[in-house]
Length: 212
Image: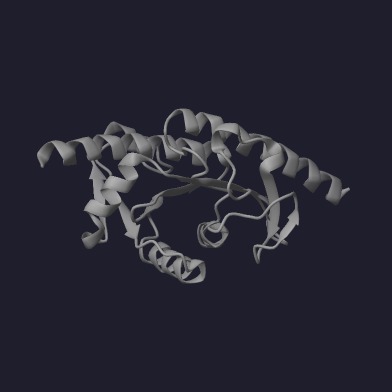
């Protein structure tokens, strides 16, 4: 019975994650094969639904969603998991997230490079900040950390873990010249956080470019 329930949950999550692909693609956040999405199927033992590597997000379908374990081993599905699976696992374990979403927008790339030497930057004073979980005022100051990108995923996951521990209140982080990672208790909340951050990144990015 439990196995049947988990299988049904996995199918539901796969469908929900797949719907994000064309949506985010149309907004320019995951062009081509960029970006990756995941959601927790089960906590004990940990099972994650995650997008297969090298899939065009504009045509993402439920069949492109894999099931992996806590060690990133593929348990179900065809293909290989994203190279960044370890980052998803780190966020799930340290933040208790139910879903983790990663985008590759123009503005996240510009700002992650521009503010890298500062380790991140603050976003404050915008009404849209109230779309982040637990934020009730536009006077909130959201620190968005920036992590140097790397092809060594184990080393990068360790950096991400250190960053999450250093900034326990952060709702997301940027990989330099790469993109945004954010999360939520479920797919709906994580999607909202992507929309909030991408709006704010564009506003701050346009201000940054206009000031130069």
